[in-house]
Image 1 (cartoon, rainbow, N blue to C red):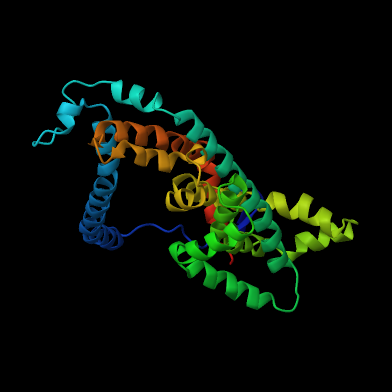
Image 2 (spheres, rainbow, N blue to C red):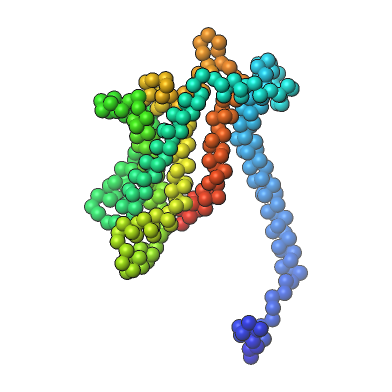
Length: 308
């Protein structure tokens, strides 16, 4: 015998609704009591890791607001007794700060745009097309990604020097693109593979060409992957010191990481308070960039994990 619910869905009237029994409730409570110590332990470990990770950032900000006399005391001060903004004024007005900031902006923008343009085209070709040598290219990309960057620094410098790219923005941008491109291709390929082939086939049935399928159908769907890889390219180019110091022969073309090293000299030593204030200023663009794309970054990384 069946009766109809107000929604019209037939339900068996002779099947009683599930009622929790006292034994079941007691068992559930026992399981929760057993899991409670595990949750406490895992939460405590997570808190310890967070404190260990965030303490250097806190100490950088703390030192940036201290006078030099407080920063050099033998007893650490976990909060400045006399907060000051003089360190930030000194760092901001230091010679060529705006020049180095402009250099970093040019190099980072070029590296991000070029790595995205090449990465999305290469990943689309390696995921949506079948051609001879495709697997070999994928394995080669993975092997290149496993090599340390310092092992490739000298060969890159020799090659770029022969073609006249050392000391130029173009050479530094190409060096960063070569470093982040394997990662960008491998990550965005996972996003392309997560798109069902039926979507592409439907667009072709409607008369779309290959280029229209890529630009109007596939590229918008892999936008989260583009955002995720742009973050990696941005950080790699913004934080690099050794490549910029090696490739840029003129001090007027140095980037901000090289500028941070100018707070240490052989005559006066290290200006710790000024260097920490400069580090805070150096970190602000990265923080702002993350705040802008945070939501898209989380959704992009979870979407790319569907299929790879």
